[in-house]
Figure 1 (spheres, rainbow, N blue to C red):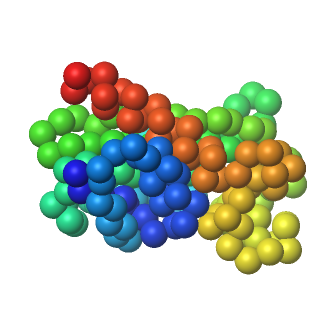
Figure 2 (figure 1 turned 180 degrees about the horizontal axis):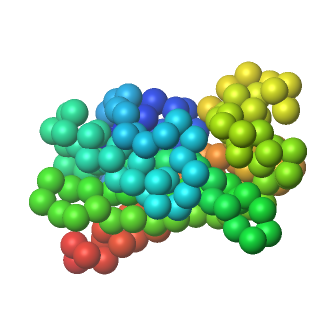
Length: 169
């Protein structure tokens, strides 16, 4: 089975590979555009980004499965929440979609995002680290390391693979 991953982000790639352990699989990573804003600002936009990445990844490498993972934010009455979505697609199917954990972002981060900044660079400045999005992510910073970005996306991958297995049994 050839699995096309629509990103080269190490945290997302690790999540995909971990979730497919036990499968005989070849993994290929490709940088594909999400087709949405650099900072998706709703569940709908974040889902669309994940689906677009899955479709474009599958098309880029003629694989058996395309995977797209996308992080974004969602405004709520309590404040701005981190959101994450994933999509799995095969050549002859509609996308399978799953969402992950949510946490409320601190207001000082939310204000910067609402003013047009992107979460990745904001977190680099806030945490005084480089490439937070490629390691622990905002979720890792704000959960004191209990959940990192790869773990969060791994949960989404298990939801996707479980649905895929159910539909193909």
